[in-house]
Image (cartoon, rainbow, N blue to C red; front, top):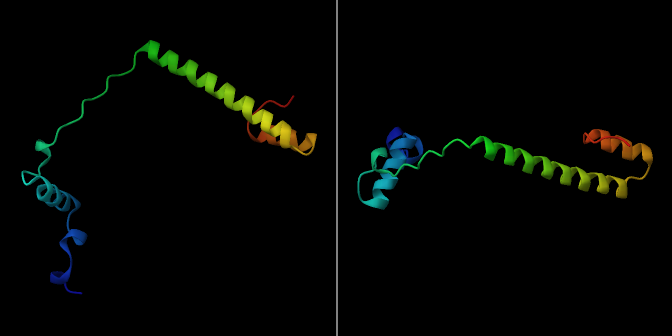
Length: 93
């Protein structure tokens, strides 16, 4: 295949391809300055970080409880149960 036969949308620069696509859609300028920029999210406060940590700890507690219940219900022997608990990082009783 000769270079003239190649599709510029497949072999050209991705930026050029995107810019031509956007100019076809909008009928206007396709440079990055014309796009609306999303605002930068502010850093979470210390209170929000603490609340997230509390929420994550509660979620982990619920998941561990569910996982322990499933292992206890479906394990065929105490050795298998202990191995599965150890494998998932849960305390062996």
